[in-house]
Length: 194
Image (cartoon, rainbow, N blue to C red):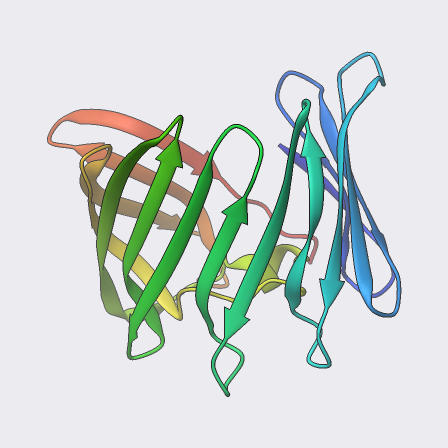
């Protein structure tokens, strides 16, 4: 993935491996996100309203013909505690639980074609390693950071494993790998402008 930023350090363009991309436009109280195919065809868009602290509180999106509304709730410290998606192909409600500045549990209640499922994901963290790969660190200042520290493990019915990291000379994450035993589930590489 490749990223472009404005002079305020906000993400303005995110290009994916297969050359499709998203653009971000900022107003005083909203963010507009547009999705494009690799042939520059508009495939989706969303407009999200910001609260007085600059975080998304809700909005309307239509991504690949999937129209839905989104809503976000925060505690008094600006930490995301609830999110919901209503309409479109499916609906869900997510609640988040935190300990020591880290999101340790995420519970998603999904509804799809009158079927209901509950997905719980739990995380553990390295208490001595600060995360440099959260939302605000790559220009998404309108989204709350979910983790103060780097994730150590993840456990859910869809994904289970241990995270491994490599760091640059400034102790920032240069690579994150998730493994389940000897099998690599995914890896991400990071580079920084300075």
